[in-house]
Image (cartoon, rainbow, N blue to C red; front, side, top):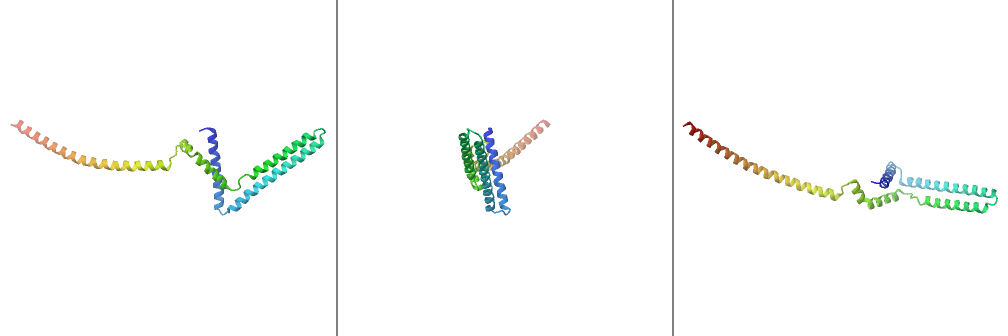
Length: 182
């Protein structure tokens, strides 16, 4: 397993832990609206912080550019780039999923796409594999029962033959002893 696959598995495990945490919180009585609203509020705070930071940087750059002679054109270009970057960051923060349902669906999609590889890598058994093993087990247990029944029949037949041979041997030994005594 390569480092990229290991990283993907660790990210997946972390996402599952986060989902379990939110599920447990929800089961304790926290409604899903409270969790969603707190996540939404956190996203808004991050967005506001980014916009405030970009505004401060823009102001600082514009003040610096006004103080620097001959560099006004260059500094105003930097200010515009910083504000564009701030807008892009705000857009990225708004794209962050508010609901854990989106994350769950993405995890499900990943598992569906990679399920065959995960089964192969981790040597997992599928329902089909277990079903085949159950069928083989039932066939083997029927075969063992049949073999045991046939063995018991053979044992009974063999024991009768051994008794017959022992009786004949005893009879022959008895005749031989009588002949040697005479």
